[in-house]
Image 1 (spheres, rainbow, N blue to C red):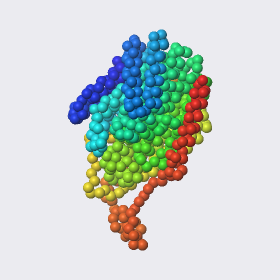
Image 2 (image 1 turned 90 degrees about the horizontal axis):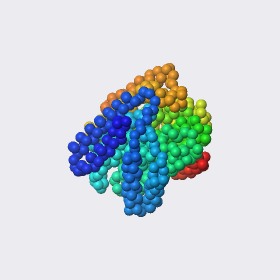
Image 3 (image 1 turned 90 degrees about the vertical axis):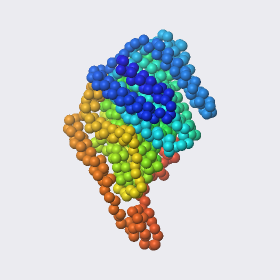
Image 4 (image 1 turned 45 degrees about the vertical axis):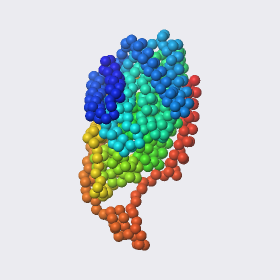
Length: 626
């Protein structure tokens, strides 16, 4: 128990230390960040090594004082957010914030003195996996941010340098995420849940520019709606069933709390109709995007829905709620996969890809069978490592090329070969056999065939769109071009370490998926479902062989990027490496653009319709709960 409390509290202590440092104390800040990252990742790995065997373990202690501290913190946050909302004339946001705080205050006054959680903390293999994602990937993002933020402010002098505040929020975010995944008490879980909402709001609005403020408040409003649903569920559970813990959610007298918790998970994981908040988060510095997408915020949403997954499987009434959850995820997966095709902004492609993959996780968790439970957790793992690598790589490209459009990544293998190889590994990890995401999608298809055949249509069409938008981006990166003599890429040591570590980690996680399945997932599934999901030895061997063959590509690309570029014949008299003099006496430039099909898959064609469909599905879900 002491290790769990340490992982929750230590990041908050580091956060306040960093907040108190003067802005120009780069050396001291860097020392603290590096030391803290080593401690958090090391303790997370140690915890996993100690607890991965055996079933779930619960920890009890007198939490009255902590409960009151959490309530006090919620009231303080509510006052701060309400004040900021009024200042920016966001009155509806202030109302939402005060409503959520009022619900929890009413709960403590009315029921808090009579209903208490006995088992406050939980550690099982799911929380251990999430802790490793937070501790390892989250800390690598923090390390990457050290020099990135310095360069960011050099390139954006109009943005006030609040680097100390930035890292204060980053480490508070990590502490809150540890709290989310270790909390068995619903009050504790809600408290940390709301801290992640506050942190995301502050990070998205970091630049304090008008667009950043608008997008930050949009994210806040949508997540506060989910928070109100969460708070209402806590009150209903305590009042009707005297339930205060995650592990007590089966066999309830009413399904409405389950539907409300699922609603909270859908908002936090940016499922439609709430996806716009995550798209708007792209205005934040790139490490924020990596953190939100890989090891924090949206992962909290799918984590909660995965916790509900066995209830959807075993409770006949809850199964109807689960199907509505799965349908929201299915529509989100298909639509956002097609929307990603029409995007030229690399971060926007990654954002839609994240929403799509989270949708697939929601599909698996909503159906709730043991096979799909396995697939959902595997999707979380593979998505976390590959997507963090891609976001941070795009950040490095943007700082060196001054662009993050896919159309400006032609010949990246020649300009920035090491970063390009990292991006290739990340992209392969997202869609190509036998890398991890495809293994998980294959398992999802197999599970859906056995559980709900109709949903396989969504996965098939969404998977096809995924193949298309990743392939055309990959083609841009590996194109070999001439490099201007004056171009010199600059990647700091901390950035290079984070990118290299994530690239290696992506490959290692993909290679070790049979071990992850055997030692982490199968014991967890057996505890919950009394059966396990085993990959056949033949299939595993074939996949590992294919993996070895596929690793040849990144290594070959490193050599290709160093080859000298030879001018090609361009249907006329060449006047440069990418220009030629045509037959009619005119000069032409070689241009190669990808297909984006905006007239078919543009946001104006698909977005609003899918939002309406998902709103209807969520209303049905709540209605089923009633």
